[in-house]
Image 1 (cartoon, each protein chain N blue to C red):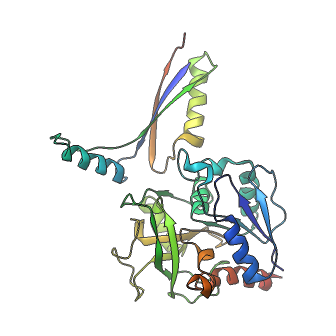
Image 2: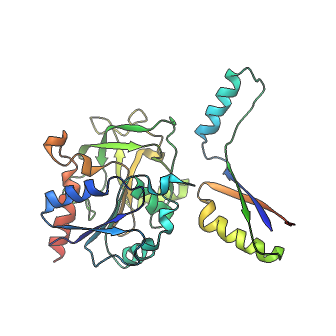
Image 3: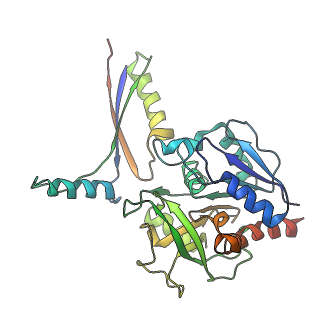
Length: 82
Length: 233
């Protein structure tokens, strides 16, 4: 299975990189951008074919390494791989 | 004597600086320990040095926190061995769970490399006892991720338990927004655990430990380690 993992900053955590992107967009003349938050996207291919077990593995990798839950949230979707 | 061990991660770059500084100030040889080893030799103090462990991949300190050696560092810290994390070492301490919070990208988004002034809030820890409370000292910082963040409850707890060890301040010792180089919550530059034996510090004492380097304020942190060990002997 393939896991598509998204890691985002929690609400209330300042994101200076997002702010810099927002300013750059406005400098490009792209109007109407209300807010920008930058995050991470990680794809993981797993041997596992059982969605339940894959979910367990992905939960563990997110909690233990991929996200720092002090400041970040994570979410993911699992896809069958051919 | 002082038995100090410095952990060397791939990408550490202040490991030899702290070794030279410690040997120079204390007179005792320092052991270098590779991150892939399973055990730290019996030590009076363990140092996690500054640098860019694992190229700062994923998050600063995140990979190093899962290095084989860190299992033993965490176990020894929990059993009472003093540990100091300097700059990247502070990031590793947070990622390993020995200290709360996290060091985020500087609010300015810039890498900051200059001397800062610090107010010593807690002069009673293993690493700070050669200072006076509220003493203002000058040390260099060199980081892109030194912006200390924790939730309000954690910050309040750190203050209540006297675990904020140093804060960025001005020349008069006022802790102001203007004196905050990186956006850290409450101007925090260094915090310790409940025992005062695990310290995370963004500034680099080893870069300013003798006058030939332009100042010697960093020396007192190294002298504090020696004094703490000698007092306990």
